[in-house]
Image (cartoon, rainbow, N blue to C red; front, side, top):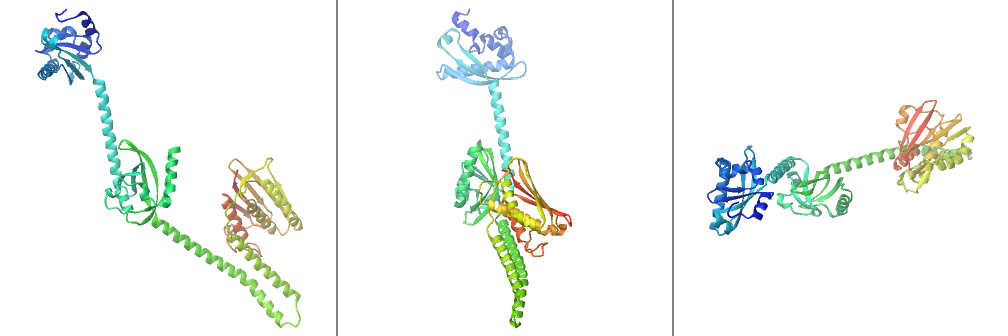
Length: 480
């Protein structure tokens, strides 16, 4: 035991979990514990005998300890701490944190100090890994920003609704001269006030479900110009925080062009409809005009002339009534779940007498359980009445009309099949066009209305036909 030793201190010294050593001011190791022996890679005897102290790594470490100890004494301090990278005999680096205590009793006894060695290698490695990861993230972020800089689409990165990044395309979109004109402003300033409600709904949707989705906005540029944009938003990490990346495209010109095309199509349709109306009404008016002249020149009235005039006037009335139905908005006013079976029963009861007069039998095939769809009762009744009337009018020689209702989890199918004169493929292609019909007295408007109602109920209609064998109309409606 050394003269400055104490049995209790010796025990604590030896059992310490961190490396400890008594080192003199001339750089000699006087005493070490086993923890320091394991840390430095030499036995306790090698460290205190002096042989290991000739090793350049140990010598450099001791010189650093002596230098810091003397500096501590000069500054009249009792404790100092520094870090040191030690080269282990296995040729690996060990990051050490050294704490030097220059106590008076130690200085009087042997002119030395107590040094504590703590291994910080693992901590240093973890810190280095974090630094590398941060460096890679920064590199990725820089690459990402470089990509955005060259992107032709407009990109804004926002945090909590405040713009933190804008690419050159976005500057051109909002008619800004420099990024500083846009950075730091709220998206509420850019998005027109009429779309603020949509903006708030998107934020609320993200808060609830984490989804944002695509959106169309009317924006107000910095110079007051209005533009329509479409785009979508992604959530990313930007500068260490969550941010929203909005990618937008200017569709102002595209929308104007679509409006122009739509207006042009409306005018074309209106012109075609007007031409059809003029043609259809001119024929009965010509007949009426001719027979009126005959009546004027006749010595006595002719009942046949009056019948023809009355028939032609009824035809004009029919055309006008169907045009009025077609002109009414066909939006679906939902009346609740509709039992298709119940509707068909009512319609068959209504049409049964008319069918019997033409020697036609209506045979329904229904499922065992009720089948429901969502829609407007009267409009769907009009659809099925039109289809049954068309089927009966196509069957001059009588026959059978079969009516099937099929369904699955997704849709309900109503199939109307007749044994009439049928249609060619060319005739099928023209179905639903105004004033195009296969019937002698038809206008083509009834089927046009039927298709419109089915479309507004989210459904479709298919037609299959073979000349002289009959026609099959299949209506597909979403199942409730």
